[in-house]
Image 1: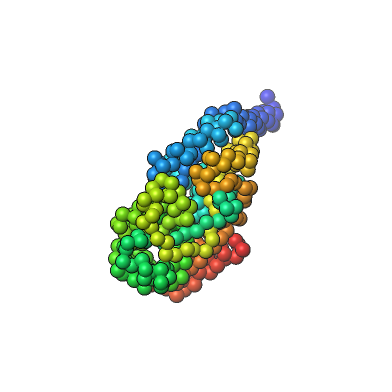
Image 2: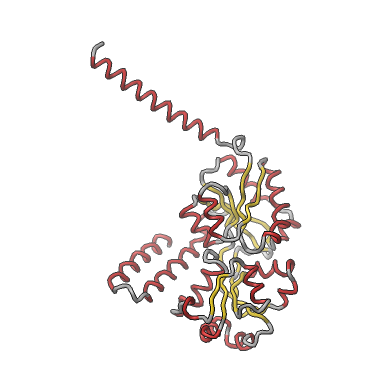
Amino acid sequence: MDRRLFIQQTSLFTITLASAKILSACTSNADKSTAAIKEINFGVLSTESQANQKPIWEPFAAAMSQQIGITIKPFYVTQYAAVIEAMRFGKVQAAWLGGKSYIEAVKIADAEAFAQVVSADGGRGYYSHLITNKDNPITAEAIAAGGDKYVIQNAAKLTFAFNDPNSTSGFLVPSYYIFTKNNIDPKKGFKRLIFAGNHEACALAVANKQVDVATVSNEALSRLENTNPKARQKIEIIWKSPIIPSDPIVYRRDLPNDIKKKLQNFFYNYKDAQVLGQFKISGFVQAEDKNWDTIRELEIAKKIQETQAKENLSEQEKQQTIAELNQQLKEIQ
């Protein structure tokens, strides 16, 4: 055989084989549809214990399963990081996250927001609180001084509980507005500092006088009225944050489009007041990633102030880091 003809035929065979592999891959991805996916794990935020979550979530998951035609299994976790990691490795395909945990999930878990929670009063935001026990001797003075100011001035005498490092209302928001803006490092400032793990744990730590002050969301306090009214009666709010964008509902970007569409239709149209009332919300609306840019800005602003306070960095290193963070802020804005 002519050598040039052999090379041409060999090249043609190689191209054909490669094309077949590409076509096969495309076909495989196309097949990854509703028919190929029998079950979806839906990540449930760790705002309270699983025992309290299940009666709320099971009717909601059942309604979702029925409408989209795929079994939805609530995936309960004890920490925010757990649902992010589960989504990262494909163990969770959709989730109800908080703002801060969503931003982290975008970075590492291929998450995409498509809906946003609407509160019972029709709002699209919620609040972080500082709370203390009504019988704690500090309570009256803290209210009179302003809870945030009292905590700043008396941190060395107080025991304090954050929620979870990936919590928006339980860590990021109070951390920024109370501590970062006042150049205070909470890890060094308090008599004792703990991370309780979730909103319910923070609330109960205060109700049971295990800590003086803790962080919690207004939504978690509302739920506590149902799950543990005696504990709620013992709690006094001493600080309220600026409004925080309400929670995103997300799915992995690699979910088939037909399933994404069915999830969208479910969340945008679900109106069962009895089920939604258990969540203390009225429903969900369409949303996009930029809805949580406020949280991104808070995180960057917090990093800028932390960089300025670092004693182990040279002035040149500080300015370089701050310039990079300011550039990130510009890209968001």
